[in-house]
Image 1 (cartoon, rainbow over the protein chains, first blue to last red):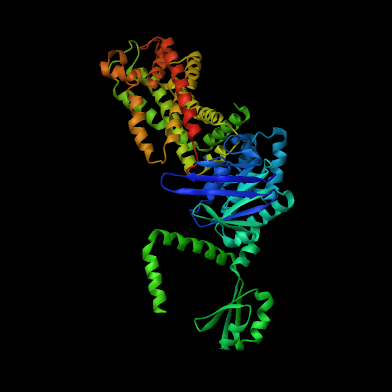
Image 2: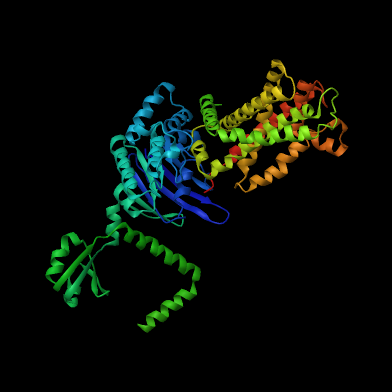
Length: 324
Length: 251
């Protein structure tokens, strides 16, 4: 049974369609990254799966329970860490965790032991009795993750878990997420607009844009689809010879350097350097998810614009071709 | 109904209430001003109840005022919770909206009751001699009164989108509820239109029953006050549970 299975989920507000027909299947134990720009529909999708927002149409099974007809059952099986801070400032970490455990109906005898365990997991044992308002952003985030996990959910939703954190705290949160995946095999759904985050944490990535999943694959496969690493060369480069190499798919001049797109720089870099003339300086930039995102979402942006502008774009395109 | 969850919600409110001590004091300021400045200032004004001063006459009304202000403010506070995502944590929990509403409502009563007790003690010391029985009775009445008014606050809070509406509610609801309740004057001697409006005001019955307990004389019979309070408790519960049921995350 998949952890999550959505069937043509749609959420329409009066002015916008936030989620526009998403059908997904996420197996148990997977870390699924939902990547998209602000306003792409990430949070709305997660909110529907967490039964906080009612879908306009379509449905989903979360941990085998229907979000429309069994919301309480769904909630018992999920943990959620919201985008905005949602721990109580005026309570201590322990109190926050205690109240959460009570709300989730955990047996009272177990609660304190479990709190100790969770605080240790996120490295907050020493600060368990401090008021949350004395916490840094990173500590709050870790507390929220602990809270999201304390009732042993099968599925954990993390909505932008590192938004607004400094790099060190971000790394710490990542470490915790990886540990969770390894130690508990919790299914994790993570939204982010940091490519690096999706790349380093997710088993699979869904790129969401304008409420639709426009691309879905492993990070490696997505990068492969973009297909090229960039090599920057400086010196007396033999442009013609480079173009003839089978693994080179583009050569451009940029700021006094040559910008060369090649397939699999790991394998082909040596051959490129051998056949490229007298080279003084080399810089290699491997394809990142940024490129992937630009490629897919960028494509979608221009398509979107074209549809709206209709004739005008065509005419511009025609005139450009003519000038060439 | 999930009692563990209600206990948890109640516990949260209790802890927060006692940690924000400034709030306990600040809420008592305006009632004390009414009581000591206006009550004393109008000392020459005759009391509608023979044998008592004007200050003593308005004391039950000021007591109702404390409950009114504490409870409405508390209810409206969930707009903040909504904005800051505190509420989401509870909305996402596996508890029904009715449980959530009752838990919040009982949590809100707590503050009002503590304020009531404080004011009762101040009143017993400086204004009107009260026996322990009378204090206990007044305190007991403050439970359902605080409950129905918290319900009103929570219902409005659940429907409101931003804190900007707070001032509007205070001007268009809280103050009218207070002034039409007969807290400061004798309803029996008031203009008919004021009396008509006051019949719809839940605070009227709270003031009246407190007055019966403390001064031995009110505008309505005690059973009518109690019945009206019971009806308001019921109706506001239904309204509140419905409003909470519709509560969704906003994005």
